[in-house]
Length: 197
Image (cartoon, rainbow, N blue to C red):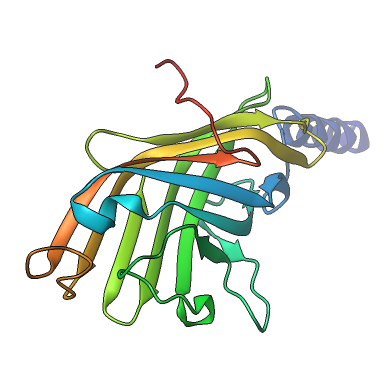
């Protein structure tokens, strides 16, 4: 009888541990890579003309948030390329430094939501993009993954607010300072729309 009770308890423990398990912690649920095109709206003077392409990869792990953006850098280029750097950023893109983080949440239906923050610097000029500003922004897209497989983000859209600070009066007239506005960033395409707008 004692052996039967031990076996019954062991079977119950295995059943409880197996139920409700979606993905083990630290497994990749959604990843993304490739080029994203960003369009900045608003701002004054040259600060509102800083459209760019960013190439980065980010992986989201079950049970973890705020993963780093891994920018695609080579010895001769940065992970960010401006279409019109103007006086705000150096034409030598190797002088540009970038960093950021993102959280991608994937539903059981494959819908991706989340947040993203990015900072681009060149000497004293700092451009910050965030989805946590006012008005609120976000991340949208679809994932090809399932509960048991890694998905790849497609049709990605990121939107939010940007802020540029610069002491250069040629970047932000008349005497430097800061400028701000909104942005939209599209995965693998030049145009996209904010979901629900």
